[in-house]
Image (cartoon, rainbow, N blue to C red):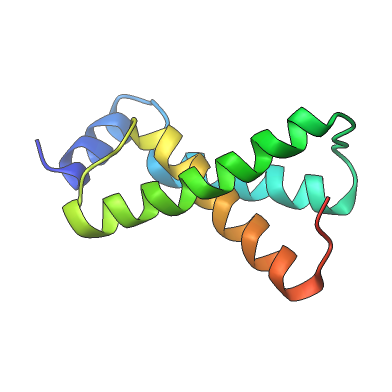
Length: 96
């Protein structure tokens, strides 16, 4: 089943889609950068950077193969968080 048919299927039966996951990822990244969500432990900061790297890999996988790497909402979250978090940190230098 191609990815867009799978995404439409999830949407039709009321489950989260890639867009839903991306929206949650963007909200999480903005909350982290604004300070609503705080990361206190060094290992959590490392996990955020790993998630950023995975976001780039998932985005490239979807671009090249046009298929989900994990599942559609997880792919959306990872891509949304990775892009917003990475771009805002590069622009403003507000790396946690």
